[in-house]
Length: 503
Image 1 (spheres, one colour):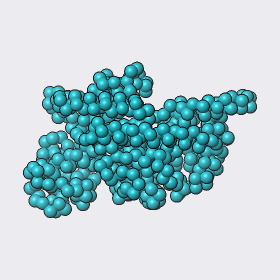
Image 2: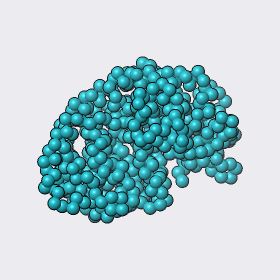
Image 3: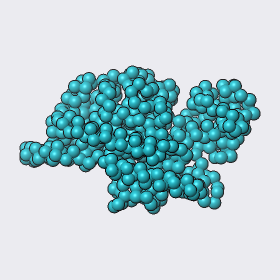
Image 4: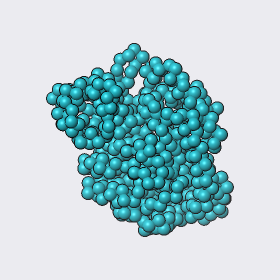
């Protein structure tokens, strides 16, 4: 289980004692916000009262009172003689504080499949429509090549050679020399992660994840019977991650401390991280590779969003720093989710193991899609300039709309990817998500991006829609928040968000 030292908690607290309320209450309030924001993971053991009082230079009585208040509020467990651990309470309509997982059957949020009900603006997705002409042309070319494959059986657990060669060439050109035998073609990035988990992780194995992280990856880790080990980001939406020259969002000290627990795998999204849009610089990539190697942890890197580099900042693939890195790639974000084509890059030995494990899931991907994907990968840069231009315009429009209509929201500047991670003025993410359909929008609540209910003060807002739709969506968000502000009891009675699928 994760734990936090007195020095570590003191660093996270910052300037907490401003004198607005009694000291113990101020201390409790800031610790509570750290838990709600996800900067202190759930089930983390806090330092002892004596150790924290010494680190903060305050009386032990003050720390004891703060911890006591947090226990009363349902944010801490434990008591005399045992270290207190963080948790998230839920307030029921009857006023009883409970600790529960996410609700699963909220009719305000669930819908068949992934698509939003007709008439709703969908902000639960962070995906683009197809790069139409380019995709169509690739399939037309693939259709002419398909007859050559028809005499075969059609099963290929590793993937068609032309596609594997094209993907390998992309990695080699980016600075990570790769052969076709190091590539396994999959039915998308999620399929790739499931194969990796099935091959390399067992039940109850620990898997390090960033906090927040991609919800479907967290679901896959849990479904495999593994235990996610969350490591909090240090994104400061109010200035610490705004554009060039800002401090990196990844807390390397926290990552290295978590790796000392020797998790079996570490799943990271260093390229325009989902949901925050942050980019890990090369020096941190080197540090992460070294730390994972020292811990004997397999580093799994999701590069699904790597091509959506809106500010043109250059970085090397993490695989360029170590042959032991396992990389996931996909065409779903750069071209179209409907292609269902992804890949794993790893050592030849691991690729063979992945292929053997894959046969319990399927016997190979559709050949027509792979033929088309080979054309798309070989000409990967063709549709990107126009798509990136549109995304930059939409990003600028969204940030301007949020600043104008929701100035109390803090949106961390995303240097790439498809979404902005917004810090809300209060822990209302789930409440907003529940009432959002009443205002014509569908949202993905902040806790879907965390472990155990964190991130009630955050909301992911994609900028994949055109500016006019984004304006309508932001105005709807303004109206939804106004409703909550006018009826604060809604915050206490709305249940936690269900585990709906999110792209």
